[in-house]
Every structure is written in C-alpha cells, then in structure tokens.
Image (cartoon, rainbow, N blue to C red; front, side, top):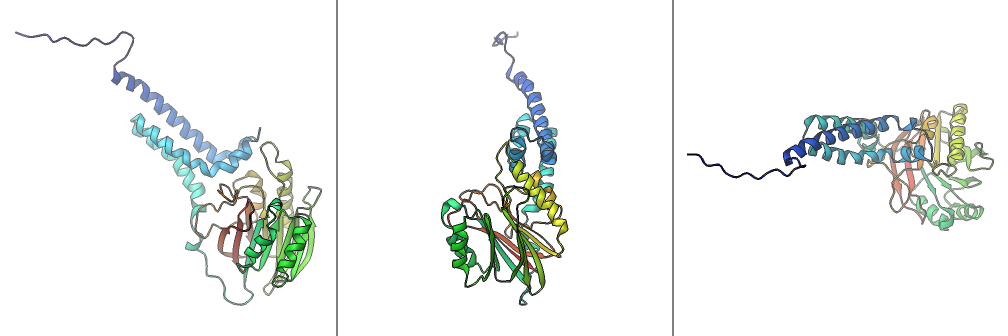
Length: 330
C-alpha cells in the first residue's frame, strides 16, 4: 500500500529558486565578461579616449587606480559560479600588473650607491609652494635642511623670490628667478633664461649648472593649470618643452617642477619619450597632490645622462603639494 504525501504547489508565475539562480548566472557571467573587457581596453588605450568634457584628463589621471575595480569583478566572477569568468577577470589583472607593476617596485632594490667622490653626486629638491600659503621661506628652509644641492620652487610671487633668496643666501649663493619659478644652487648657474613655452608669460626657466663633472642642463617648469575641459594651455607648454629638449647640447639634462600632469597623462608623452623618471625609493606611486591625502603625482623630476640613486617625497611648509627630493650620480 502506498501513501501519497501532499506537495506544496509552486505559486503560479514564479520559478523555483534553483531556476531563478540559473537565470541570474548567465547575466552575471555576461556582466563580468563585458566589464573585464572594457577595463582591459581602458588600461591599454586610455590615451586614445577623446578628451570630451574633461573625460580624457580624468581618465589619464585616475587610470592607475582602476586596479581597484578588479575587486568587484572578482566578486562578480565568484557569485556567477562559473570558473571561466574568473579566467576572464585575470586578463585586466594581468594587463594592470604589466603596465603599472614595474613602476611600483622600490628603487632601492636596484639603485646604485650614491657616489662618495666630491662633485660626482647631485641632489635636487622641488616644490610648488602654493603662493597663497605664505610659507615659501619655510618650505625653502625645510628643503635646504635635506642637503639638496639644487632647490627649484614653483608658484612664487616676486616677494617670495626675494625672501627665499635672503633665506638661502648663505648656502646657495647662485640663483635665478623669473615669473613664478625660481632656482637656487650651490653650483654656478650660467646661461639662465626665461621660457614662456608658448604661454605668453614666463612660468619656466632654463639654465646650466656648472658642476665639477661638467654642465648639467636644468629646466624648471610650472605648467599651466589643468581642469576638465580646460587643458589647452598646459598641453601647449608641455608640448613646447618636448620640442625644446632635442635642441639641448648637454649630455646631462633635468626637467623638474610642477607639470600639472600625472605620468600617465597623454600630454606627458613627448617629454617621457626623451627623459625618464625613476621609481620611488620605497615603491608605490609617489603622489604629491593634494598634500594632506595625495592621490596623483603632478610634480616630477625627469632626466637623462645620469643615474638616480634615490627618489622620495616630503612635506614642506603649508603648500597643497608635497615636495620631491631626487639624488643622482653624475
């Protein structure tokens, strides 16, 4: 004798839970694959995205942080329950590691020791002192305390230059300033001249440093501000600098200052094809702005003909930019 047990009827119009999960999984798989492919394309080709409405500027600046998007993608792939989606997510992860991973490696792992012979080592400090902060002299004092041979400052007023020159006179007898930029040196500064770089007024300078190892060209840059939808002045300055560099006759060249552009910005391409920027001594991005919570590196020292032995950032004064400090073997 058999007994028939009552069964709970399935409500009309609803699918069993297992069926609902099966319905959702293809959607999650499709979303994971689509987002993974889009992220991969952006990582590889972000500079090709048209800068309409400031999208290009924001994308170029933030692109290193897009690695954080890998976290929700991995979660989606796990929730989807399909192993193949995890393999797809590994594609943008691999691309991100190949593009940005080498730049995060600490310089101290591979940098040569600083030369101990007199006159064979050069240390350069630079900062946008934020004129409205009123702490340019304090910044200069902090940077001088590092033992830097060269101090380059940006966003100065004419009063800043005079005050800072008085502050640094004892240890930095050679100086040159024009517009919003200034240079103080322990070595003679020769052939100094202003550079307007197409802007119409001077926010850059060029000079030669007369070191015991020979001349070192230095360009101090305070690029025009860049805002979403308004990058033409900055781009013109950086393009003009890139066009100037091939004409430099010295084997050793430095370009330092506030470029108002991240290393990943398309506007830096012309300069970065001729000069290189070293990794941070302790690794990571070395962001300099804003100083209280740095998220991007707008301040740079790029060079050729020398070997960087250390590269760090530090706080100085009350500026909204952190300072950079780079040492090189001549």
